Image 1 (cartoon, rainbow, N blue to C red):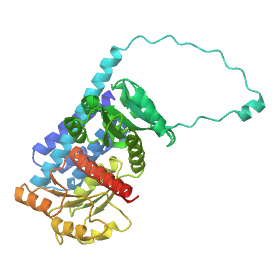
Image 2 (cartoon, rainbow, N blue to C red; image 1 turned 60 degrees about the horizontal axis):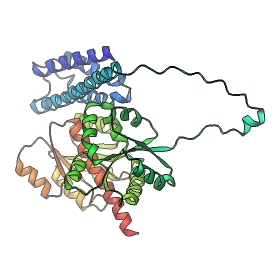
Image 3 (cartoon, helix red, strand yellow; image 1 turned 135 degrees about the vertical axis):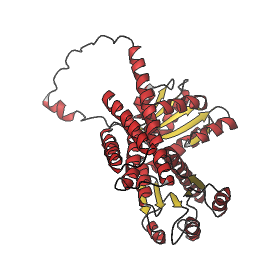
Image 4 (cartoon, rainbow, N blue to C red; image 1 turned 90 degrees about the vertical axis):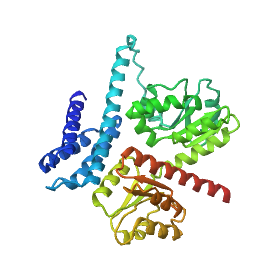
Length: 395
């Protein structure tokens, strides 16, 4: 990985130079091809966030590689923002690699290897009766210093096909566990949430795992500050134990069932290059997407596609974002679907206008991949939670 990191650092330097000087389409093509190549080579799950950032930058840059003039000021600002995303993920990977190296240098001497005596061979009739392989159960990691809560939750989830694995503390080794495909959720005490946030900032593997697994916080008290911290961290649920144990188990089951169905996002923007970027970023985050470049055909896009979130560019020909927002709000299928407006307009009155018209969020261009994913995932989680709550109320 050392040579790859050196090549990525050089790519970042060359891309910064490209953004800072008069446009050079040949240099742009070279940077674009190298960014795409890096994204393809970064196949390790630990590097997925960096690959996503490289691909997003390359996708948007590709729209200008054949231009002698280059991108205008706003589009160049978008390229710089995407490049900042690459820099951020590269820094996180470098920090994580340095910590791994430090930890490996401090690791204790390995224990001597013990070779067990070979097991006696089975008779043919015994071999036929022997089970083939124990199936792997879906696992939930529970950071529980006492071990008591994990045991109680394990009994509650046993009938649903989940096994609860307790851990005494949250540390960097947790990231290795969360990368296993059988791990479906992580439960942390409220006191450990700050540690989780710091680890996720430093370790790209944890950041990637968070997009796949459920994250729940438990506490012994209903502290509003802890609830606020959990909300900011984008957790799937906050529960006060021991009274909420039954609700915790049912919420985990419902949330994980929802996660089997990827979040769906619809994006309407007349800028083809921007839809390419958003599409690549959201798909890399495990979402299903549908992109529309003609605003007059936006309503057709929901046929056979039930979006959890709708993203609309504010300024488009034919039908602008506010007009589309009104149409979606009047449609029975999308009347309550979260809608995020996207614009480079810094006018606070315009932002207020979009929110009073029924918009749920407002993102400013240039878009950063991290901010985009956080906004879409946060709104999608909320939408799914409301649907589950509505289904329960009808029973």
